[in-house]
Length: 224
Image 1 (cartoon, rainbow, N blue to C red):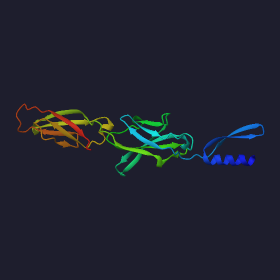
Image 2: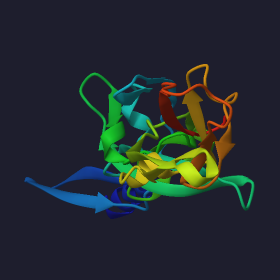
Image 3: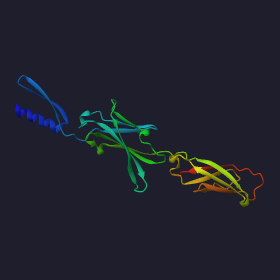
């Protein structure tokens, strides 16, 4: 009896991370919890679906593939690194698998930046780690933030026959990211869409009739 019980425990140890083994000795039944080495999960992930608010992935129903405790989905967000020309990790979020065999992560969990290339990858994971060859990913680009300018002021420079415009960049850090230049949008009395990388610009009114009306707007540009 002792030999058979030992063999049974050994086989269980090799095939599973945890089993309850019951051994009957005479008229007494004893139970013991046997814990074996965890393995990476074998569950499949499919249909990574993203909306404006979240990303959700479907998970394989077969719990026999868990191979270890604490089965969950690990979402890894990476951003495009211009210097290295590759994606670099930004943030990792772990989510439990629901009773509907899905796992969801919200975009607000990542604090995304505007006009940035990202890659979101979902991995099946447990206490042992994540299974890379079972992952599923999605690449996307966030939309531009409105790069508006503030405090646009016009000043008349009579000695130069010019109107000087000055402004300040948007105080919002993310709205200023990626701004390359500023374009002057004006009515027909201005030149054709002059642009600058500074925060000042001048309009010449030399040769224009007296009381000419000028309507100007400064737009910050983020070229795609």
